[in-house]
Image 1 (cartoon, rainbow, N blue to C red):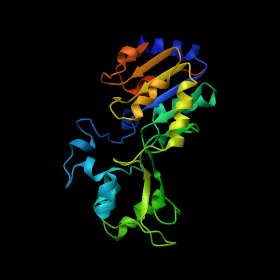
Image 2: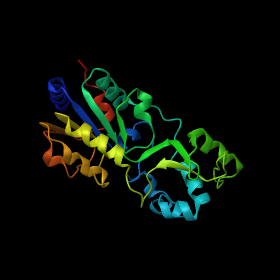
Image 3: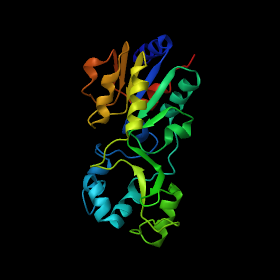
Image 4: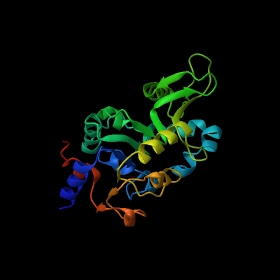
Length: 245
């Protein structure tokens, strides 16, 4: 019945915005941070929250990259039914944009173009000194010199840093502006695969001024009471059943 209700909302919507989190990517085999099997529950030399901070990156760059290459880069992952359906909705002209907390690039791999990556992407990397761009393959290959090897710019020798928002770093203003425009222009907001516990990202849903909020998440969230429809299931299995017409 819940999927039928979602189908009716999608059919009646002219402008849908999607706000998603780690749960969108777990169905592609990418572990999240806060589940029982996520990165936060796994043993490491330092707590993941500390490793993925700006100060740790600056002060212990080799150890950062040891963790980052093993736990944050999942190049074998492929888009799942949720990614594909969102791309289909965009192609049909029914989607104002995808606002994601994920850094894996799977939305673009599925074909989505209007993607606002709040926390950046592992696929983009830049020299901290001259700004030269490097793809994710460069980061992976640099690890062949040792698991704590630090990728260095081939042009100037500077340290190459992932375009990923670490703890202690702020979100990109241009990305935020795009996300706000997509959400505020929508008549329906679908929130999926997120606990809505990560701020300031989660606060962006309050820019929604439309009619219906659909919340698809396996566990309850703080926004359940705001939603017209709550579906306590995996996002891929639910969105995969929606027919775009």
